[in-house]
Length: 258
Image 1 (cartoon, rainbow, N blue to C red):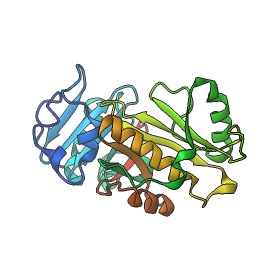
Image 2: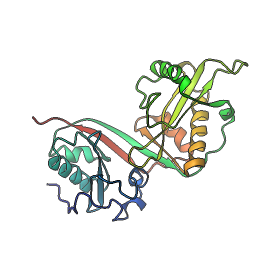
Image 3: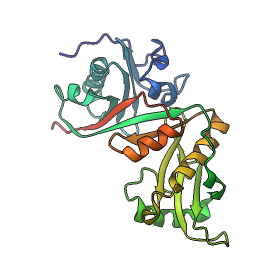
């Protein structure tokens, strides 16, 4: 039985000081403060959760047992409004004792407050505008079919890329990436970084990631990103760039029960 003491579901997410604890950066950077009008949220017993109503997604942070309790309570209270959730690693198994859980994916929410060391190839990075969207989309379809954010997304503030170094400055696209934003807070989120499959290992992704990180830190004071748990090259790169690794997460869907 998952036990948790709940305050009203419109509670202040920041009332417990969870955002200052290790493992709760998703709350610190991902939830807008003060609370937007109409945001449904829960907190209590060392965990906090909030609902992205458009997606039917409950975000939760804190101790896994308490976070799972909030997810279960949210799903029971809003049976037609909660379809998926994110929580600290292990939340999926705990929620699964009470509700059917599918498609669990483990990942890490990473963040930095510091500009990374300058990469020599950063000078090759250029910002793109809407006139490049078709080119970017074609590139992503080939070299990163599972990209999280596409050209034209309303959440994206910037696309950048690197072209082949052919001397005329108008070579083919060989790497790209975007600065998107977390839906509730608007915090900068690096997304859809991709490198030409035939040119990987040459530092193009590192240069682009370093440039985007520097851009975000200078304008917002920090940068965030999502990293799949089993991506060892990305793990090494983000650590080298100074991204903190304190927030292991899991996301999953709730299977329909009727």
